[in-house]
Amino acid sequence: MLKYFALILMSVLAATGQVLITKKAREISFSGDFRQILKNVLNFHFIIGGTLILIAPILYFFALTSIKLNVAYAVYSLNYIFILFGSYVFLKEKITRQHIYGILIIIFGLVMITQ
Image (cartoon, rainbow, N blue to C red; front, side, top):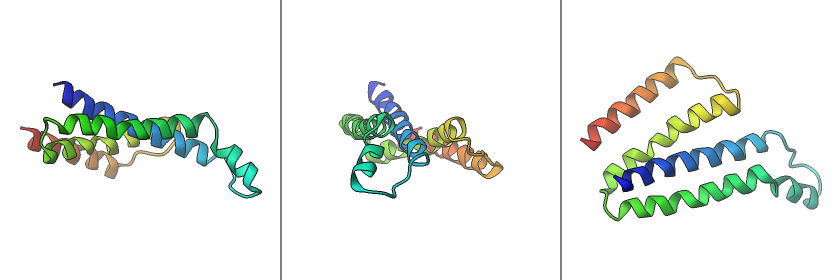
């Protein structure tokens, strides 16, 4: 059970990191000199987001010690769901009917594979 928790936490951390980095990337400009660009990327959102993205594979490796790869990779698909909701809440992106259908397909597939 701990290994499945690690997989789910991995998905949450990776999705959170992606949302944080995207949020900041949309707010900054990459034009200008190197110092300005460096200042833009060395900030809270990029550092925390990058750290979360780096921690996620460690949890994935931990889970792979006792979970079959095909099951672990299926659980990895939760990233899409977490990113969808994170982008809705923090980036104000819309969730369409197609997104909902996609989530339902992911959940159905996950249930089928983990049975």
